Length: 541
Image (tube, rainbow, N blue to C red):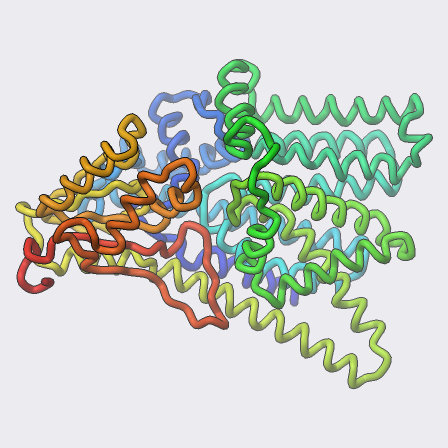
């Protein structure tokens, strides 16, 4: 019964807000773009290697069902084709909503599957109570709920990683050939979801050595088992990402090399700004302070007790190595985001569940035991509220408020809204009468320095258009100020209202109380609207 309640909580945190942004597509990482192309061309070739293709094929399978229910209708991707769908009687609107709801609901179900695997690991190695605590912590992890809203690679990635880690525990335990086949299969599938899952090699090797001993791990049988796992992983990867082999050159350039240069923009890891501290704060945001403390306590217990607890020795070994290795590896790069660090959260929940029950059992007096139980209840209650607030932000995204302002501003076909930002960061254009236009000036890196500044500032100062922008866009230039000093100078002038008569006429954001301030990824950017107040309709000057 308790597990059923936990599953319902997980589903609710993932499903509330599932219509976020629709019919617009506000998360450019959702895999509907390559899938729509594949469905249009009737092919399994994604022509896409930013990520491997397991998650893409999962989204494709679900989208096919929606397309079958709405024949001769296609999902619209670009802004100019989506805007007409804001009219409720548009013939494609229903298909757009159904497809996106279905592929996002599939992500919610993948999150539930991951929760059940975490529960099963906890029950097998610790006990029923520890398993329930772990599942409960997982279900109210804001970052997990955040990712479960999106048809991105992360929900599938988390499931494959947790299954792989579970198989590594079996390697430590028994070391049978079938365990190595299982480990290789899940490792290959995880790597076929995201390239950086190759970091699973660290806990795998540690599991191999931990289970066989150093001598046994390099014996003839040990090498055969390693080879079996590696070959199985390669086979699983190729089966789930076949075009990585068919189009190997494109896969190498657009996938492997591009991933490396994303983490090391200068082509080397030497001298880069590290992200261990930013990732800590992202975990604070993704879990909330109380739940993160529980997770860190679980990792500390795994480090301290893995040799003394025979039943849980293997799971302590595997999951502490995974958390520390993955965190250490990702922190090497200056590139950081909440979704990147989420693969360690299931392990934090599992180890947190174990340490919670251990504290209860070790409590010396009934009063101390009651205090510990009350603290755990408060952690779960706060984390559930933290998740609920994040879901509220999905329902009240700042883009909705910005769109309502534009709709109520009295704009008509004589008015133009220009934007420099990505389409995903724009206001919710609801049945607009005005025109909107992309201005490529900021993105055009052929124009730099003073030439760029003079050109764009003189254009904006003399324009009667409204300019829409978002901190999700312009802060990327501030984060790399040494590479884009001219863009930073421009945005500082624009934000400080030093570009001719242009002013920031409206700002939209989500404001939370300081004690309950989740920042779900991709949700609630600051939307800034700039214009010459004298050019606006009288009611909004």
